[in-house]
Length: 253
Image (cartoon, rainbow, N blue to C red):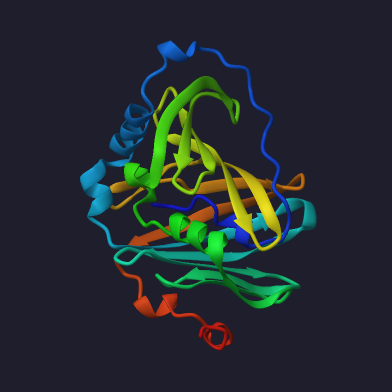
């Protein structure tokens, strides 16, 4: 329900995945991938709690320490239909905005101007906009399989492979001790080409009836980008925030 690929939209640069860690457990001794995901769902509050919400607003701070960049970021999401906007205000650059309104995916940045997402990039944006993504709906995947117990972000984790219906594959990591989602490796086709993002999440805190990760970190060409969440609100999002801005509307035919 939080965000799996939000930072990739903010800076036009390749992502590099972490090198695979050594497998620690034989495949036949690993728990089922669906069981691992279901344990995470239980730990954050349960399936009913996840489904009890229809929208969510996350506010926080985006930092890029190596470049001395720090600014506010806001992520809004909603269900029925799935919609999402990500807006970051970057000092010296301006507002960087990404969105999906249920039909159209788009970006608006000072570097590229208004752009519509098309073809595979649009389909993948729709996948990532899934408001109930936390549940890892089996209908969105050909298979869900635990591939190894490994070390991720310095802690023992189960690595779960999710083969998507578009032919690509994502990897989720779940903390062995807590059962909570620890991060992921995701591949997406974007305007600048195919990129792979490695994300770590943590700092779970309770907001309402759900635990939510309050930190998300990705490395962009060796440069760390981090989102630190300061507030989460459920079911108070104004639907108007998902409307494309005028420069994007001008591109929609």
